Amino acid sequence: MVKFEVLWAEIEKKGGEALNEAVRSRREKCDCPACPTYNSCAGDKEERVFCLAGKTDCIREEDMQGCICPSCRVQEELGLENMYYCVYGNAKEQMG
Image (tube, rainbow, N blue to C red; front, top):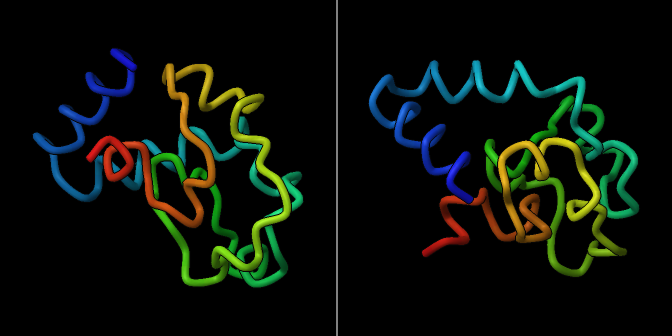
């Protein structure tokens, strides 16, 4: 979690564009499109990296069909442990 906390502190310090850049730089590593919960709405909007970007209007609790966040390279890189960021919010939001 320390890696994420350091990244999030930088994002908060630099502002919204820093978050966009953090998401963009991890798009290729992101496994969201392979997740059983990921749907065509999120795909059409090219949404991913929910662990940083946060929840989407495309996916709701009733859409949840399994979560592959625990095996995602982005989650591993950032030292995260939660699941269903697409529904419950990014790692910072889930920390409380």
